[in-house]
Image (tube, rainbow over all chains, first blue to last red; front, side, top):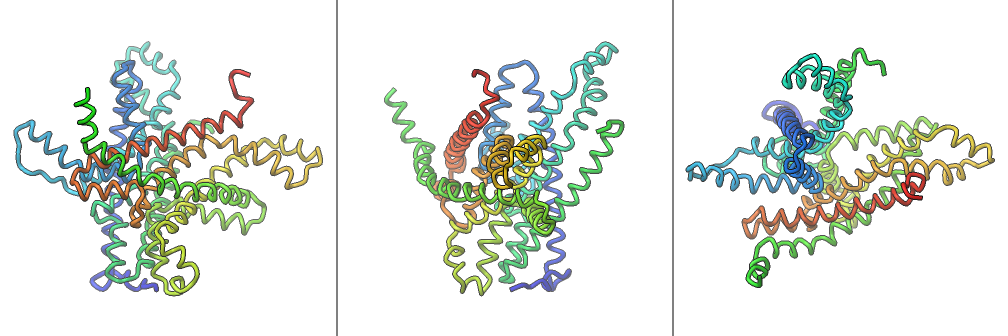
Length: 235
Length: 236
């Protein structure tokens, strides 16, 4: 029933494969979290400037993506992404077949999902900054650029950290869905190994433990960051 | 005008829409079984979590920790592929349920929602003001009556918004059951995609249906919030 001896490193076991798969999961999560935060900042910006069209687009994007299963979004980007990229390339006069690699597609797909959650968190923490702060900065003659980097972002980061930590956990767990695209991360690796060794229980439990470790450790990291960023703030 | 209507009727999205629609009842069936059971169990687990019996509280805490720390996909696979590979389970009565992808999905979804729900309800129970409980005690309420008349109603209505979120997450989570060959909406969309090689049309048709389902869920939760928070209504 259990074949935990198959988890040794080297040719006899799956230990090193699982290590690489874990790193792949981490890589996809970090990349898509970063890209997602970038997209989220654009979304928040589109929502808070007084423009009906951008606000409508941003609201449409967050509502639709959050109302549709993650798996569906991943399928859509995985199977439909190539066609979109090729049609864009056609506009620029490039007619050959383009295939995005699995890592790119995975990153984009998870980022598109994670950005919707991040944008809600960032928007809430932006709104939590009191208006007086921005007015004070303006009164000091700071330009828009330095207001954003010196006044708004440090406070947004502090307010948003707990929420961003939650989004990170969701993103980390969402990467397991990427296994349907064939990218070898923890989930895919455990399916491959269990098909070879005919012992799904062993490798699925391994996967569960690996995910548990990742979420626990990153939870600790975010706790430390929160303590760090709320220095001088007695709570 | 008629030409336009005809072109819509012949479009792939329109045809796919009705194909995917035939999977709607399977999706709803998953929800109809797992959500009510999940709700009741989550309440019980939350009560166990806040109880003074350390062993019970610790056990439930670690259950919640494990389930919330692993992806739902792992849980579904563990039940569908993992438990199915164990010999004594295949020979026991459990196999009647576990050989069906549907029941595996129901079990996995229930296990998942119980963990998240219990944590939500725990927050609600712990946020009840002490004075509410004390006034109940001073009226001579027993433990059970206190629970039924004061603690649960206040806790549940307090956490309705976050439990509503969890319900929407569950609607979305049902799509993962398609990976165990259960043919609900995502599974059918996937099949259409494999047949027609038109991924966008297939998945948009499914996406519209999921959006509609979630819209209904949001309205349902809004109605519950309106009904159980009469003191917060604007016009009364």
